[in-house]
Length: 350
Image (cartoon, rainbow, N blue to C red; front, top):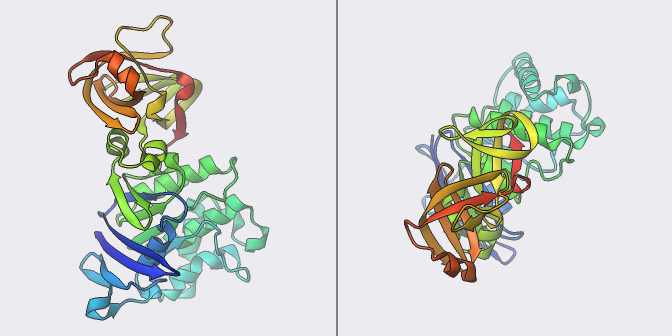
């Protein structure tokens, strides 16, 4: 079931006009600076803010189409929404919080509570079932909020900064849980986040909003190679490598390895900013742990810098200054050496 949205909303002097799509099973991360319209977009998709113009379709069904006089209320959309501040019902137990949406969809009380218990177990929160929200930590409350949204088996899942208010100690486990549940869904999901690593790790694609409009959309690699704004270059266009870690080695792609600063075990994602990638005309002396030969595929000026897309054992994007680009005589086909310090690689479980 595919989401196709053309959202036009004006609220309090702010105008949002954004078009986006999310295929069945796809996770689209929505990024952008504060005030870009990210949360307004999610609220419009959920039906909390009606469209002024445009249309929202989920599969063959129109959810909001002002020109046709169509508006499906939030409770009838089949949408699960998770806020960063949890918004659990304070007077209900954790179990009944999760069961609430299932019951609202017509399931008998016993069925709803059984499904709620199953989702709490999946979220690693079974031991919280009898507690009230006031007794939960931030990480515990967000697990419950995620279980509540997923228990209704929503056709569309919307997450508004779900990890923003979580303490650093709880965040890795919650990110792993979120990644697993998002990857297992058959419907589309949208994740609003201000965290570029979160967007790169959890999203199949990234849509970037600025000033109420979509300025760029694509995979992290596409955004890294050709950013269209300073925000994208600085915060979104990252190199992302997924693989299996064993000790200080992360095996990616066809057996290529990245050496890591810290020992890890299991599935991990490595994130590298293009500015952290160094380029040399010959193999550098005293090479750091990661050094390999590469060929320039493209070099694109951006502001005072140049973004360089490189092919090799590990395809990567680098960012260099204009003088450095001139010294390297950058051109497609030019052989270079890539150097990357292990300390510049951010690794995320999952």
